[in-house]
Length: 95
Image 1 (cartoon, rainbow, N blue to C red):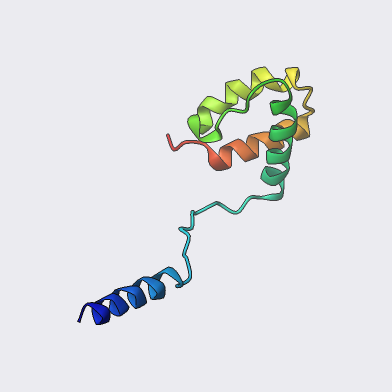
Image 2: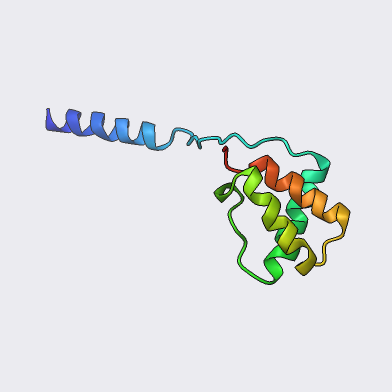
């Protein structure tokens, strides 16, 4: 009887340990071309001088003065600034 119980438990463990693992999916908004370019610029140029801020730490409105202050320091042209703006708007905290 103990042997049968052992076989059942072992079979149960093997069956569930060999089943495919699932990973939770997160919803990521589809980025526009501008926002995708902005992500690259944000990572490369903004991360050059300081640690990158989590984009969702700020609302869309809070990002405006941050970008206005930091874009000249990062030497972003108007297109690059607009692209970074599109990126942070896509992931900004709801507010």
